[in-house]
Length: 416
Ligand SMILES: Cc1cc2nc3c(=O)[nH]c(=O)nc-3n(C[C@H](O)[C@H](O)[C@H](O)COP(=O)(O)OP(=O)(O)OC[C@H]3O[C@@H](n4cnc5c(N)ncnc54)[C@H](O)[C@@H]3O)c2cc1C
Image 1 (cartoon, rainbow, N blue to C red):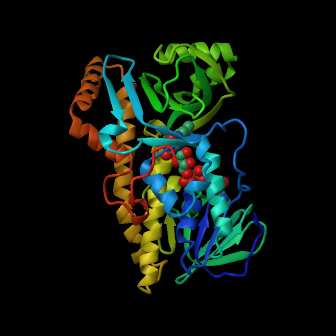
Image 2 (tube, rainbow, N blue to C red; image 1 turned 90 degrees about the horizontal axis):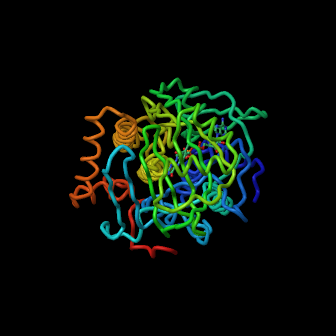
Image 3 (cartoon, rainbow, N blue to C red; image 1 turned 90 degrees about the vertical axis):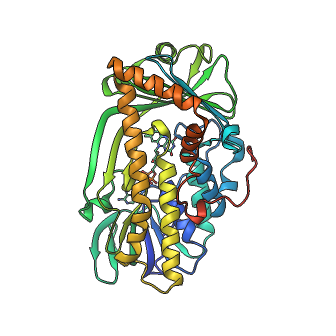
């Protein structure tokens, strides 16, 4: 892959800062059009994972699969390493309330796909390398930003500068683009860590995900193709430190006590990693000649597995808005153009942020009236099929005003 700096096509129409899953998807979505696109990323792009699974995986909604298919990246995401999720069981440790989601109720082949983040990144960067219209600056570091009436000038830390009609901040939760544009963000640090590991159990259930709500936070078991599970365990900072310090036997014992017996005995665990959990929402997604997408605009608790999926819908919506403006011969960096993207996505993202935050708080409470309420709520939702189906459609990214790239053209085979 050629990741050397290529300055020939400057000035650009769109310069994307951040080549994570969301930024790389936007670059791919714009790549087929005669727009001059560049992507600037400070890490070298990862190569496709081989051997054992890597620890960072994501639950990818059917709408996200559709986006990946439309931009030509899905088939390179190593199908043999992807696990479809056909069923999901959620239950409360503080009572008997439970809910069971089944893809058959949704009329879809599955609820989600478990994919390694590196597999997505490698496929997206491979796609970018095939695109004549996309220049890559990687590894490269963002320096100063100057916004002019008709363009943005971006300085590179290693020297040189680039001009673009629109600058897109896809540079994650600690976005420098957002900070340099003085866009404030409402932020809440949960003082929690998400511990991730791969775990083997005595009685695995294929294609089934599990999530138990504990007073300390949710514990999710996401299925992998080889029968093991990728776990995400949200705990307070002190508990995270203690769990990371345990040897494997001690950790498995703690995990067993937290999860219970539904999958039999916990048998073995891989190495563990921890990630800080926070909630954040930018007050604006756009400014003249600037737009924010993905975690740069919003960060949600991982309990509903929605962060990447919301970011991919941002990328698809922004691509559609920009291409519409380009075809209508309008300025793609004008505030009027990018505001359409903000109007489209901000409400939906905020709704998901409020929902996941509310669930986090509701299930973290030990006030008995709330414990009773949430258990009744779980049972009721489980019993009322239309309500359950609505929830599933939202989580699968199949509801609402979907960008064209996220709209399925035909139903996809479940395990392709
Ligand atoms: C434990 C855990 C589990 C999760 N599970 C799920 C899940 O199951 N499903 C789901 O949908 N979401 C999940 N998420 C959320 C998900 O990981 C994030 O929402 C997603 O990674 C955001 O992608 P992004 O591309 O916007 O940002 P990032 O992944 O943060 O990418 C930003 C990119 O910008 C680059 N960058 C940053 N600054 C600069 C700079 N100054 N110059 C150049 N480049 C720069 C970075 O190197 C990086 O490549 C989970 C999160 C956690 C913590």
